[in-house]
Amino acid sequence: MVKIAFRNIFRQKRRTILTVLTMLGGFALCAVSYGWSDGTYNNIIDLFTRNQIGHIQIHREGYLDRPSLYKTIKDTARLEDLLHRQPGVEAWSPRVFSAGLASAGDKTTGARILGVDIARESAMIRLDDKVTEGRLPSDESHEALVGEGLVKTLGADLGDTVVVVSQGADGSIANDLYTIVGTVSSGDKFLDQVSLYLTLAEAQELLVLQGRIHELAITCDDLHQVDRIAAEISGAVNNPDLAVATWKEVASSFYQAMMADKEGNWIMLFIIVLLVAVGVLNTVLMSVLERVREYGLLRAIGTSPIGIFKLVTTEVVFMALIGIALGCVVAFITNSILSVHGLSLTTPFTYGGIEFKEMNAEINARSFYIPAIAVFFSAFLVSIFPAVKAARTPPARAMRMN
Image 1 (cartoon, helix red, strand yellow):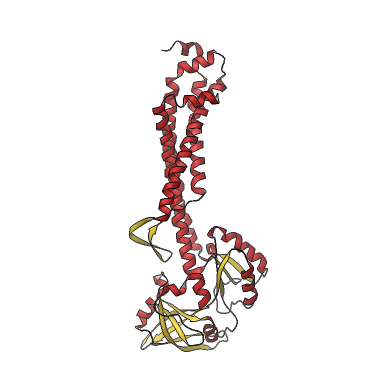
Image 2 (tube, rainbow, N blue to C red; image 1 turned 60 degrees about the vertical axis):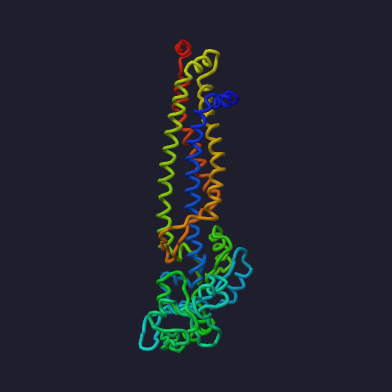
């Protein structure tokens, strides 16, 4: 039956080619769509996490729910040694946060004070590449790096002095003078309106947080391994007072919005599979109706109804496998081109505070096995009705047909 089925699909070459092309087109469309969707979303995630929050963060327990100046991490040396030995960790950076006021001349506005290790922050989120004018602040020099939007709000220039006022961890009023040595563009216009960067040591001195931090941000080599690495870090930390969170928890609203948007892919997959199924059903049913005499002859020489059923479904399975194999080639080539060159957008869009001008595809297993399963089983399911019809062909009446 397998040999007969294989020969039968080449008897009506035109019909077979049209059926295979239907499956190929459906598979390729699904695969390219999934590859493009996954590539775009993963690019958004990677840019968002590497640009701001990192892939994993370590905080004091409860800090994410209610950030506080007093919820700090003390034993940073042990944590950094642990991260140094953790496979998959690319870089990390200790951070200190506080809200305050920034003044320059006669203008005052709210500011988000960030104390960072300049070298580690540059290695993790490429802070040095984001400096649009001037330079990075140096250690123990009372220098500040200010967001482009904040500089414009203050009406300040490089070399001007900015007065920073906040609250110290000991209850005192924290205030000091800093020289603006550079401006930064993070890619998030809102953050650039309020961000003021100090070196970690000077921020700890200003806020009376000697040796303490609020956050340890981490980036990983592979975005797909973030959950596993976070679990391993959490197990190694083994401290109920500390919480290890992935970017999905840190930016939960961003993650939920992205997942809701991705649900639209399943609707599109359903529509494509429906079109493929209708095309295959039409072709196979026409084939069965044209071959009634053939099925009657097979029944007359002793072929069982189950044998006829298997013959029809096997023919469809062969065509589905050919369509999927050719579709893999087409999808791989298309996704490869889109992953390198991408699709430039005439109107850039902003997602998660990051502006995107190009959408790139990605080659991954998911973009191949989901369409393959969908096309294969949809083709097999719609072949059942024609196969049953063929299996029930009365031998005597079928043999009398011209």
